[in-house]
Image 1 (cartoon, rainbow over the protein chains, first blue to last red):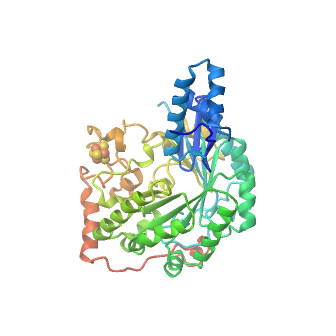
Image 2: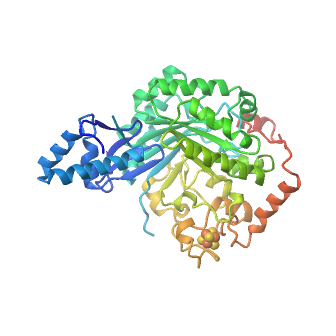
Image 3: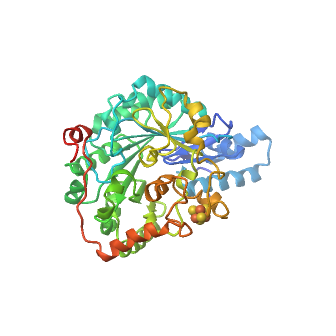
Length: 90
Length: 370
Ligand code: SF4
């Protein structure tokens, strides 16, 4: 399991943008584009070096959601993005 | 017809290049109406972003030959595009690398001819290999993510293990090992470039083993030579669906090779029309959009939404009609054309043949029959 103190960041060469056509968040990287769903976008926006625990707390406050379920969602999303080498966990 | 939104623009900003590769993507015959200016490119980039484009690749020729490259990159970043430089690396010293990074360059794709200096320089027709190695170091020192591209063909395909080793040494995050596709100069040089069946089989094993070994470290993309396939590549994900190319003279193309391969299609120019109109309304972009234009056997084939009938340029080059099914497809009535090329190669057992290096337009003009 990804530990609480992990500080997720976008991998080198990956950028988060808002797609002007759809209004949705997209990750841009060499030769590739991935459209993010709303949750993923909220998570990725916070991948700026703050620890995982803080990302979860921030989201919980904003969305008034269950902390444990939220933490599991965040971990799952980050693990997926790490597998695709779009996010690095350190 | 309803036009989809494009995602990526290939900006071929110049035909100039210090190298002479026998598979060069420059046209084999050139017009010269003058390259688009900095201001014109700025407008094209903004119009592309307005159409929905999210990524831009600066290519050529050799894009570093343009002194305003940093300015163009800056303009693309202002338009919020992801910027990629596709380069031979010749001319990319430490200062230039930093200049481009500061302008907002997101990533670099550096091309190599081979892993070994002698063969690499022979293919490039110039002393370039060492300069590319230096360029790779400069790119990394500037902190820009590095991808490599090797065009694979008969003369270097057996060196795939060493080529992959070089990729590891240079610290690249991604490598394309792309068997040469036969358009333009490569089409002229096909007999010298097409690898043999045995070479292709060995190379595939090497590439697959490396993919497994380097998972999580380097992304390896191995592109087969499509003559050996039985179904065509889904060229561009369909004509006029996701990609557009603007060439140095401002012609807007559904794919970079279209203007040489399909001479009877008229392509529009950004000096005469807005990009939006060209993408949505022009005859050239609509001609092969969707599936309505398809002849048999594609028309009634369940694969037609998967491979889109293959490549229009290949159909034009091999059958004389861009609307035909890509003759790589074994269902095509013209597949015999491709088989004949492969049979010739088998019979000559892959002997080394001469190739024609790309000549610069000025030289070509002095010696028109060269
Ligand atoms: S017939 Fe056309 S659609 Fe069917 S597999 Fe061949 S190229 Fe693709």
